[in-house]
Amino acid sequence: MTSGHFVELERAYRKQLERASVPISNGGCRADSWRGEVEWFHGVGEPGGRAFCYLSEASQRSYLTWTSEAGAKILAVAQLDSLLHRNLFFWWVNVRHEIV
Image 1 (tube, helix red, strand yellow):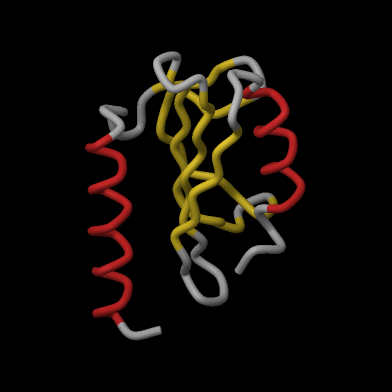
Image 2 (image 1 turned 135 degrees about the vertical axis):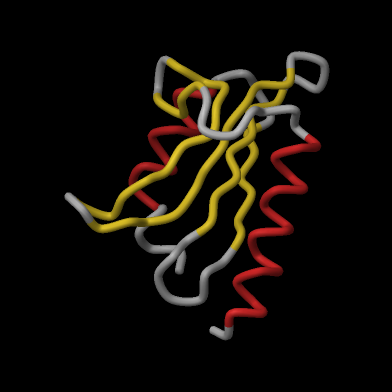
């Protein structure tokens, strides 16, 4: 992937982050902490990308958006039509390494 594509990916990610009103490098995306923006790792010392998550009580949805530094450097958005963010988190923990 060229550096131009990486810039486009970063721009798209930042735009989604801003739209969700989630501050950069603040909060967490864990089973019990569901509003924040974080770096995620494939393994120890192996960067995976960036991710942010939040709940929308108005639409009754949980959202998770992430980038992948490996492979195609994609931007992916997952949503669950409920506030059961733990279910979405546990799905993401298992699938984030596969979607590249």
